[in-house]
Image (cartoon, rainbow, N blue to C red; front, side):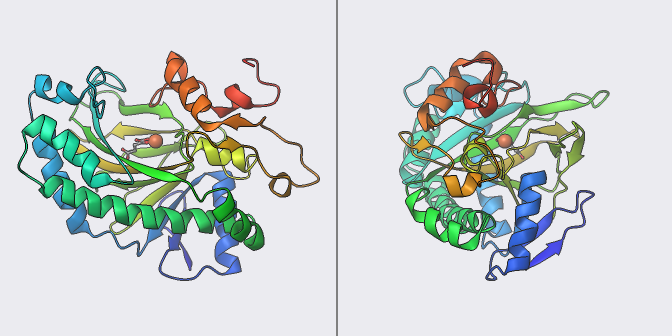
Length: 321
Ligand SMILES: O=C(O)CCC(=O)C(=O)O
Ligand SMILES: [Fe+2]
């Protein structure tokens, strides 16, 4: 079932506990083309689980910077992104699947010492639930392009997808005299992203004509957005929108962001059926990891920064290639 949300954007709300009918799928297709963002409810992730992760993560983020850098970009672990990489206010801890327990334990042991398994156990639970949720959402989004098409490609093209989680901590700005970006404009490199933003809000999506629009927080609701990989695979039928995070209050903001991604070696090419006879192909085929490397090695296109996207990389007619 799809309900209209209360947000100024009127993003549809997908009830994940209900089977999707054709009207649900057509609203989903429309919003994915126009905005690339929608909400989900009845997703099975409790507020309590989120609060526990928040509390245990805070303990790690409150450690001294020198300690956190033991898992930083120059360590062997590389799970911690310190302040001043994405923005002065943003720091993040990455937890990779499919063994979320092991990944979280590696970071927690390195940062806080061995012996406490609570953090890794709770992330195993969250990562496992998010993985199941991502599969259902992925399938539903594909079915919005055509029920048969979705059923056909869900396994053959998306069967080896994997997930990872970013625990994002935004420290409060000193003042709000001007607009403070907690995370600058970017697109995600995933197929789909599932965001648990807290009640402070601050997530914004950029419209096709360049206006920033709030994605209002709503209790019990997760935000889903389409990433670059799915935009390319769908020949722009699904939009990977630019988005950012604005810090609107002088308090700490905390979010959990789950990225559902193709396997590194996957060759991405929109199937003919997806392109459609009347349309032309927008992207050349490419290997997933080549795009990830392109973003990582181009300062302008780096994760969490304004810059190059999939169009610059494999867009037909792109100046870069
Ligand atoms: O913190 C958020 O709400 C969203 C963060 C985000 O866009 C990202 O991590 O890619
Ligand atoms: Fe993002």
